[in-house]
Image (tube, rainbow, N blue to C red; front, side):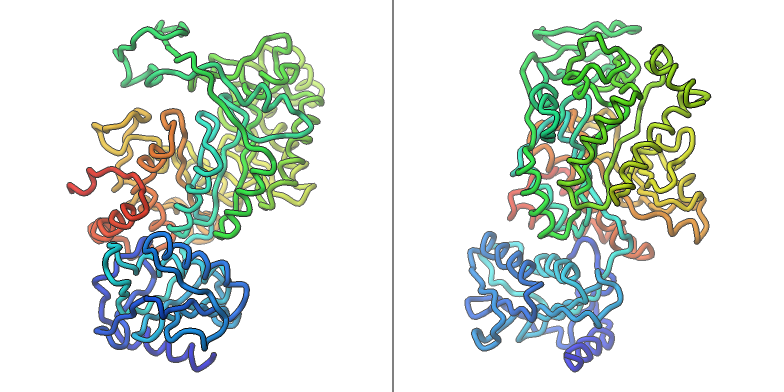
Length: 557
């Protein structure tokens, strides 16, 4: 083993030739031509995937399944080196690297060697090997001689998916997880509850899915607002008058919904685990709770009101979607969170915390009485009290909360991780308090926004081009070196107001996910947008093989 590692390192660092024909996203830390650049390795029926430990069988099978699906060639996964004449060899040695995410790949004429100190490092190596494969299925599976040494820049690399505005089935969620795996992302933020639908089975409170998982219609077209005036609609079954502009909001009157059973949740968690992706569930509170209130109205600030699952987007001040901060509410939320925490092995539970309009607390006598009893000076202090109390419960179960940057209002909970979406201000403030931060500013990381000024698909009326994503730097210049350590990473978000099917998911995230993966994985000093675009053309050919939808406009540039 020591001789094997030594030879690889000698090869990797003795040659400075560029492997020009290799186009990997995210760009590896080190990529060089092999010792004999003219050599190639061809995968054929005489090739097997050789594992040196059972812990890498999962990664080996992932590669074998990909090659069989795309190239119709079945490779055996074996621990017996005598079975075949050529091998893709996967080696785990805990002494190899101190960084468990670090890996190497060395392609020689007779073998491909991949090594890491951990099984997840081997999985990342597999993703790079996949991107070394040809992008034509009628070609020989020939791989150029290259040496790669690679590891991520940030520990937290994530994508989010909103399944409340539009529900997506388990098969679609699994595909989404596969897309993240291909780009070496390691967290999936699953937005499971909101005003527009409750998507997770809670056995103690069955009405959450019986009632809260279904709405009676969805808005047609864009929400009226700046830049959206003058949009004309045909007559639809339902109309809602919104003041002060008296804009007419039309909904389609079509029932929409769905939810995941706890068995389905377990299945998705297991699927993600095999791809070394941790799922972080989000249960929204204290606002964005109309689906919950439709099922259990007694938890609202208007307990006698008939709440309905929301059919339209936005307008948080127009609709009372805020939970009453009563003992009954806290007991309910603790029951819900207990079931969620028992389902998800993740250390982290996202509790939302955003866009809680204070007006509903101000006008509720019960809330005001509660504030007085707890000596809370205003509704911002109440927001902080609410988050602190939930955090204390989650911490008591050995878990950590994540919240949108509004959890800073009134004072940040002591162990909370801040997800900074309203720009970077909240993230900067949290990092200066020496608390972990996930950067996800709306203008840069919301992939529900338009990719082009004149987009050929309905999207949120904001513009987020690929270049803006690629040029983003997650560590703000306002932070010194010590504070910068608290920037855990960043994530892209896909809100589904205007995303109603799996192909639209793909269209919205590709290729912006490629850009995001590179800024989170690759060294900052190596950023090169023209080079990224060159590699992206090869990536598009790979997407064609995989049947992935993306905008063809990028090929025109």
